[in-house]
Amino acid sequence: MKNYKAEYEHLVRLNKVLENRIPETLAGLTKLQRHHSMNGDLPAKTKELVALGIAVTSQCEGSAITHLYDALKVGASRAEIEEVLTVAVMMGGSPALIMAGITLEALDQYEAENSPAHLFGPSDAVDSWGWS
Image 1 (cartoon, rainbow, N blue to C red):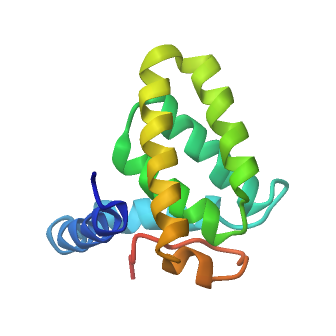
Image 2 (cartoon, rainbow, N blue to C red):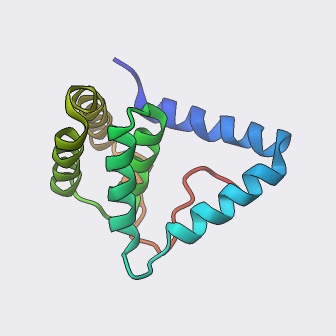
C-alpha cells in the first residue's frame, strides 16, 4: 500500500525544486492558485471539492492527493468527499472509479494517521504546495 502522506510531502518537495528551476512559471501558478483557493462567491471548501472531482476525473493521482489534503484542510467532511467522488465516477466512468478508490485509500490513511490536514481549521487560503 502506498503511503499517501509521504507521497504528498514528496510532491511538495518537487514543487520546491521547480520553484528554484523555473521561478517565473511557479510564481504565476502560485498567484493563480492562491487567488482561486480563497473564499469568494464560492467558499474555499467548495472550490477544493470541485478541484478534487476534476483531479479524479482527469486521473491525476498527484492532483487528487493534493486536493484531498486541501479539501480536508478547509473543513471538508468524509461525506462531502465521498459525494464528490460519486459525481466524478459518474462523469469519468471506470477510469475515475480507479482514482476514486485511490483517493479513498488516501483519505483512510490521513484519518488513521491523524494527518496534519486534521490539525488545521478552515482558512481563507490553501497553500499546500509550500510555495513562497
